[in-house]
Amino acid sequence: MKQYEFWFVVGSQTLYGPQVLDTVAARAAGMAGEMSRVLPYPLTYKVTAKSNAEIAQVVKEANYDDSCAGIITWCHTFSPSKMWINGLSELQKPWCHFATQYNREIPNEEIDMDFMNLNQAAHGDREHGFIGARLRKPRKIIAGYWQDADVQKRLGDWMRAAVGVAVSKTMKVMRFGDNMREVAVTEGDKVEAQAKLGWQVNTWPVGDLVAEMNAVTDREIAQLMAEYGESYDFATGDVEAVRYQAREEIAMRKMMDAEGCTAFSNTFQDLHGMDQLPGLASQHLMAQGYGYGGEGDWKVSAMTAILKAMGEGGNGCSLFMEDYTYHLVKGQEYSLGAHMLEVCPCCAAEKPRIEVHPLGIGDRQPPARLVFEGKEGDAVVVSLIDVGGRLRLICQDIHCVKPILPMPNLPVARVMWQAEPSLTTGVECWITAGGAHHTVLSYDVTADMMRDWCRMLDIEFVHIGKDSTVEGLERELFLNDLAWKLK
Image 1 (cartoon, one colour):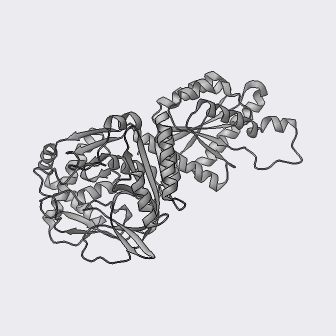
Image 2 (cartoon, helix red, strand yellow):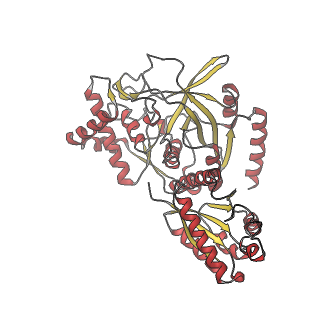
Image 3 (cartoon, helix red, strand yellow):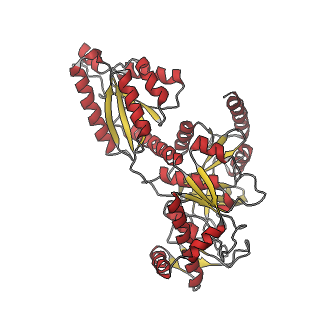
């Protein structure tokens, strides 16, 4: 991960004189330093902007500084909004309007006109808010006292979404082969994805991967096998199958790193020259932060890497997932999520086991894979789909639980969860919205963070939560369709 930071740009004007401006600058720098101790990324005070030229200059610098993931503005005093027009019109980074003030309380004995002239954020932030609305700029508005934990939490969550945008803008996906044949939802407009999201999605022949695998040395395999032994329990005597997965992992990582790719996809329908479908190899790469999508699903691959970046510093748990089967006993409705092999061990409740079993699909040798149960906790599942003419992100709230059944004959990693507002209504809403069978499951990222991410990138957002109904969602989708066509 890059070392991202956010710029604190404070609005004022020359009307108040140098003493007031010095006070504003000192306070802003102090606020940025204090908040940086609790926020997930540093908040760097940049300038007390007093003119059109200053604002345009700091925006220009932010646009071209790769370490700047967004700007946070605040108006300590009154800052006439016409001088923000040129800068905000050119802003290409996420923007948060922080409506706060330096003092928590109105000081009854001290308040006079000097105090009022200096401490008029309530005045300044409304002027500042107008120009954001007038320019129709996407922005996050957070109001509250800057030292309150709930306010800092909201600001931190917005920062994480903005980092997701920064990662998206430089995302490169390496596709080993093409999509699974005849599958609709894993398709999509790669040109539109690059224009809208910044993703570079390209294909590398499986033959290139096989050639890279053949060049892997025994020493490299031995080093990775030792790493496997430290991280996982060996529950197989078929060491050669595990060594083959190590060979695949090393080769895929070399190819991705050489091209600057942080996500990848493959399909069991295109394994020419390979003995095993990458199972353990894909799982261990995901544990290191790479995104993955099965069956050639490049959209979920990129989204997995993005959510991993957004959740950095949290549980460290965002992963490729698929709804596989339901438990429909009345009052005990659950979804069982898994995949053939490729579930990231970041969600494991206990130390994963390396096992080797026949796959039953793909016509290859039994692959080594990690087997474990997922941990408990609140989470979301998200799906990015191409609905023709635009992208839509669907996000559903879920509650992961300890699997209610041992399933001793199911040799895959699995997660079990309850869905909001209920399993059946949630399924109906998901299908109505066109959600894919592949998702990213995250214990770190919230629906609000994903809403912010979509707002920053100007794509449609659909949330399925505790208050969702099929009828309400149908109306929302109808209105969304009209609005996006008008855009």
